Amino acid sequence: MADPLTLSVLGAAALTEGIKFVYNQATELLKRRREKSADTPEVPALEGKLAPLDPDPVVLDKVEPDLRELRKVLQDYVDEIEPISAQDERLLETTDAVRRLLEAVYRQRITFRGEQRPASGPVVEGTVDVATVAGHVAGVRAKVVGGGAHVRGAVRADEVTGTAVGVDLDRIGD
Image 1 (spheres, rainbow, N blue to C red):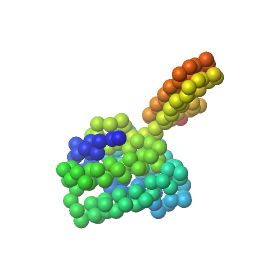
Image 2: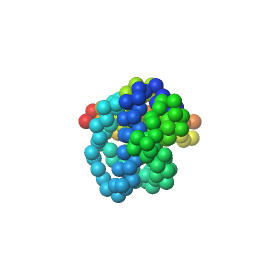
Image 3: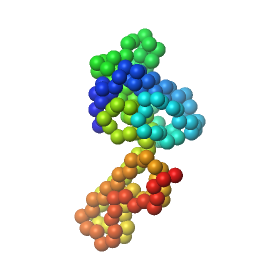
Image 4: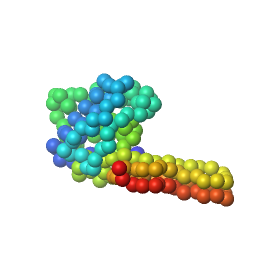
Protein backbone atom coordinates (compact mmCIF):
# COMPACT_ATOMS: atom_id res chain seq x y z
CA MET A 1 0.00 0.00 0.00
CA ALA A 2 1.25 3.46 -0.83
CA ASP A 3 2.15 5.84 1.95
CA PRO A 4 -0.25 8.82 1.86
CA LEU A 5 2.44 10.95 3.47
CA THR A 6 4.36 10.97 0.16
CA LEU A 7 1.87 13.73 -0.67
CA SER A 8 3.11 15.80 2.28
CA VAL A 9 6.36 16.63 0.46
CA LEU A 10 4.52 18.42 -2.33
CA GLY A 11 4.43 22.18 -2.48
CA ALA A 12 1.10 23.93 -1.88
CA ALA A 13 0.42 24.44 -5.60
CA ALA A 14 1.20 20.82 -6.53
CA LEU A 15 -0.83 19.45 -3.62
CA THR A 16 -3.77 21.68 -4.56
CA GLU A 17 -3.59 20.54 -8.19
CA GLY A 18 -3.29 16.91 -7.09
CA ILE A 19 -6.34 17.12 -4.84
CA LYS A 20 -8.37 18.83 -7.55
CA PHE A 21 -7.23 16.21 -10.08
CA VAL A 22 -8.32 13.19 -8.03
CA TYR A 23 -11.57 14.93 -7.04
CA ASN A 24 -12.42 15.89 -10.63
CA GLN A 25 -11.52 12.44 -11.94
CA ALA A 26 -13.73 10.79 -9.31
CA THR A 27 -16.56 13.18 -10.20
CA GLU A 28 -16.27 12.55 -13.95
CA LEU A 29 -15.98 8.81 -13.43
CA LEU A 30 -19.14 8.73 -11.37
CA LYS A 31 -21.01 11.04 -13.80
CA ARG A 32 -20.06 9.04 -16.88
CA ARG A 33 -20.30 5.64 -15.29
CA ARG A 34 -21.59 3.95 -18.41
CA GLU A 35 -19.87 6.16 -20.99
CA LYS A 36 -16.43 5.54 -22.42
CA SER A 37 -14.09 8.49 -22.75
CA ALA A 38 -10.56 8.36 -24.09
CA ASP A 39 -9.77 11.93 -23.04
CA THR A 40 -6.75 12.17 -20.80
CA PRO A 41 -6.61 15.40 -18.79
CA GLU A 42 -3.45 17.44 -18.74
CA VAL A 43 -2.18 17.99 -15.22
CA PRO A 44 0.87 20.24 -14.89
CA ALA A 45 1.92 18.63 -11.60
CA LEU A 46 1.76 15.05 -12.90
CA GLU A 47 4.98 13.02 -13.02
CA GLY A 48 5.00 10.81 -16.11
CA LYS A 49 2.23 10.45 -18.67
CA LEU A 50 -1.15 8.81 -18.33
CA ALA A 51 -2.49 6.63 -21.11
CA PRO A 52 -6.05 7.38 -22.27
CA LEU A 53 -8.37 6.92 -19.30
CA ASP A 54 -10.55 3.88 -19.95
CA PRO A 55 -12.27 2.71 -16.75
CA ASP A 56 -12.61 -0.96 -15.91
CA PRO A 57 -16.38 -1.34 -15.29
CA VAL A 58 -15.98 -4.41 -13.06
CA VAL A 59 -13.56 -2.61 -10.74
CA LEU A 60 -15.72 0.54 -10.80
CA ASP A 61 -18.76 -1.48 -9.71
CA LYS A 62 -16.79 -2.67 -6.67
CA VAL A 63 -15.28 0.66 -5.62
CA GLU A 64 -18.10 3.08 -6.46
CA PRO A 65 -19.54 3.34 -2.91
CA ASP A 66 -16.11 4.13 -1.42
CA LEU A 67 -15.29 6.54 -4.25
CA ARG A 68 -18.54 8.45 -3.65
CA GLU A 69 -17.88 8.81 0.09
CA LEU A 70 -14.22 9.79 -0.23
CA ARG A 71 -14.99 12.31 -2.99
CA LYS A 72 -17.42 14.09 -0.65
CA VAL A 73 -14.61 14.60 1.89
CA LEU A 74 -12.52 16.44 -0.74
CA GLN A 75 -15.36 18.69 -1.90
CA ASP A 76 -14.85 21.52 0.63
CA TYR A 77 -11.11 21.60 -0.16
CA VAL A 78 -11.70 21.80 -3.92
CA ASP A 79 -14.36 24.49 -3.42
CA GLU A 80 -11.78 26.39 -1.29
CA ILE A 81 -14.00 26.36 1.81
CA GLU A 82 -11.34 24.43 3.76
CA PRO A 83 -7.65 25.35 3.43
CA ILE A 84 -5.33 22.81 1.80
CA SER A 85 -2.36 21.99 4.02
CA ALA A 86 0.35 19.36 3.66
CA GLN A 87 0.05 18.86 7.45
CA ASP A 88 -3.65 17.84 7.25
CA GLU A 89 -3.32 14.05 7.64
CA ARG A 90 -7.03 13.41 6.98
CA LEU A 91 -6.77 15.33 3.70
CA LEU A 92 -3.60 13.48 2.65
CA GLU A 93 -5.06 10.07 3.51
CA THR A 94 -8.34 10.83 1.71
CA THR A 95 -6.56 12.16 -1.38
CA ASP A 96 -4.35 9.08 -1.50
CA ALA A 97 -7.35 6.77 -1.02
CA VAL A 98 -9.20 8.41 -3.94
CA ARG A 99 -6.04 8.20 -6.03
CA ARG A 100 -5.62 4.47 -5.25
CA LEU A 101 -9.23 3.80 -6.27
CA LEU A 102 -8.71 5.73 -9.52
CA GLU A 103 -5.50 3.79 -10.16
CA ALA A 104 -7.40 0.52 -9.76
CA VAL A 105 -10.24 1.65 -12.05
CA TYR A 106 -7.93 3.09 -14.73
CA ARG A 107 -5.25 0.38 -14.34
CA GLN A 108 -2.44 2.90 -14.18
CA ARG A 109 -0.40 4.75 -11.61
CA ILE A 110 -1.05 8.43 -10.83
CA THR A 111 1.98 10.22 -9.39
CA PHE A 112 2.39 13.94 -8.78
CA ARG A 113 5.65 15.75 -9.46
CA GLY A 114 7.86 15.71 -6.38
CA GLU A 115 6.52 12.44 -4.92
CA GLN A 116 8.90 9.57 -4.22
CA ARG A 117 7.02 6.84 -6.10
CA PRO A 118 7.11 5.43 -9.65
CA ALA A 119 5.92 7.78 -12.42
CA SER A 120 2.36 7.90 -13.71
CA GLY A 121 1.40 5.49 -16.43
CA PRO A 122 -0.12 2.11 -17.24
CA VAL A 123 0.55 -0.85 -14.96
CA VAL A 124 0.60 -4.42 -16.24
CA GLU A 125 1.02 -7.06 -13.55
CA GLY A 126 0.46 -10.79 -13.46
CA THR A 127 1.27 -13.65 -11.14
CA VAL A 128 1.04 -17.40 -11.65
CA ASP A 129 1.17 -19.67 -8.61
CA VAL A 130 0.87 -23.38 -9.52
CA ALA A 131 2.15 -26.76 -8.41
CA THR A 132 3.24 -28.01 -11.86
CA VAL A 133 3.99 -26.42 -15.22
CA ALA A 134 3.89 -28.98 -18.04
CA GLY A 135 3.73 -26.54 -20.97
CA HIS A 136 4.32 -22.79 -21.17
CA VAL A 137 3.22 -20.31 -18.53
CA ALA A 138 3.85 -16.58 -18.14
CA GLY A 139 2.90 -14.13 -15.43
CA VAL A 140 2.39 -11.54 -18.19
CA ARG A 141 2.18 -12.38 -21.91
CA ALA A 142 1.62 -9.47 -24.27
CA LYS A 143 2.21 -8.69 -27.93
CA VAL A 144 2.78 -4.95 -27.35
CA VAL A 145 3.10 -2.92 -24.16
CA GLY A 146 3.07 0.86 -24.54
CA GLY A 147 6.19 2.79 -23.72
CA GLY A 148 6.25 4.08 -20.16
CA ALA A 149 4.16 1.20 -18.82
CA HIS A 150 5.21 -0.49 -15.60
CA VAL A 151 5.33 -4.26 -16.29
CA ARG A 152 5.81 -6.91 -13.63
CA GLY A 153 5.24 -10.64 -13.91
CA ALA A 154 6.01 -13.49 -11.57
CA VAL A 155 5.71 -17.27 -11.63
CA ARG A 156 5.93 -19.64 -8.69
CA ALA A 157 5.85 -23.34 -9.46
CA ASP A 158 6.94 -26.41 -7.50
CA GLU A 159 7.83 -28.35 -10.65
CA VAL A 160 8.50 -27.13 -14.21
CA THR A 161 8.80 -29.57 -17.11
CA GLY A 162 8.09 -26.91 -19.73
CA THR A 163 8.72 -23.18 -19.71
CA ALA A 164 7.89 -20.67 -16.97
CA VAL A 165 8.61 -16.95 -17.41
CA GLY A 166 7.60 -13.89 -15.46
CA VAL A 167 7.17 -11.55 -18.45
CA ASP A 168 6.90 -12.58 -22.11
CA LEU A 169 6.70 -9.55 -24.42
CA ASP A 170 6.96 -9.27 -28.19
CA ARG A 171 7.50 -5.51 -28.28
CA ILE A 172 7.62 -2.44 -26.07
CA GLY A 173 6.29 0.73 -27.67
CA ASP A 174 3.15 1.95 -29.39
